[in-house]
Length: 412
Image 1 (cartoon, rainbow, N blue to C red):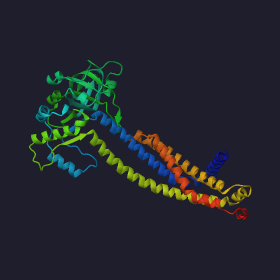
Image 2: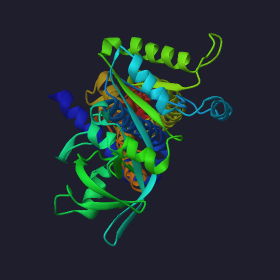
Image 3: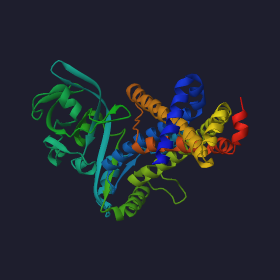
Image 4: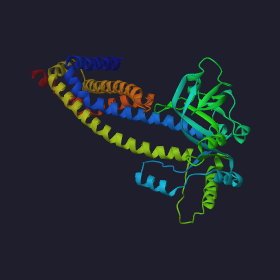
């Protein structure tokens, strides 16, 4: 009970010190505030990106993977990208038919191709809509959920029908209060009938994922041609077969393209695990850089707190002498100053949390960067700043506790 009272008394003294000299207190805690703000801001960016990667992985599935003309994982290399543009040919329908006929470890393999389109309904027009051509199995491959109507069918694709499966943004824009199925829209001036509506997917990096129209792949090729932007999406028989399925597709593609053993692949392949590994490498580098910056701020902040606490000990030498004269033990004085220093630093951590929260709101509102502040970041930020205050408060606290009461009483 006594120790609890001493804690609250010391915390109260620390708060009173903050109120008495606001500018000095702010300068004292500046390093800790910057450290906490930096730490939480970086953790928020990483958490936001983790959620983005998780959504991408869920779209792909644990056993899914994509084959594209060019895939770059990790840090962008302009020279390598230009080299792949020169070396890698476009994917083709004939190549897709070859893969589909010869693969044995893939449950589904489909086509996805896209371009920007203009969509109209009546007098309303939407520009910059993502127009996609897809095979009938793309709903299964990409985990698309239908909330109204149906997805594209094999018959739609085979007969090159002018039907469309639309995203939630298109539905809300053109048909907010009615069922969109059976309604007509215009895609780049050509009429299409809506056969289904996708479940809302939300946005990533500020970019909407529901602003799309999907039409049968063969209809897309008839309308726009079949040369540019074609890609394949595949699903292995199971997660255990994922690597074997990727190796099989790689071997088939290399055979079809007549690549020699010493030649590099002229295509790219990405699975959910590869995406996660690439992101893990990036977050590792980001976290290492952030921790270096945070460590500098924390050390600077801790040294400032220690110097301020030494000044406080000097200012309150006479008070310490009186407390010792009336029975305060060395441990009581030590605990008092440790609580004060950790409370000061903890308050700096709280200010850093609030600053990071404001930054996150502003960044989310003005930029496409997805910042999500996890609870663990708040706990780590405040806890770490408190521990820094505790550590750097040890020397001033020990110095105060070792003061001779008679000499302290004489101090003016």
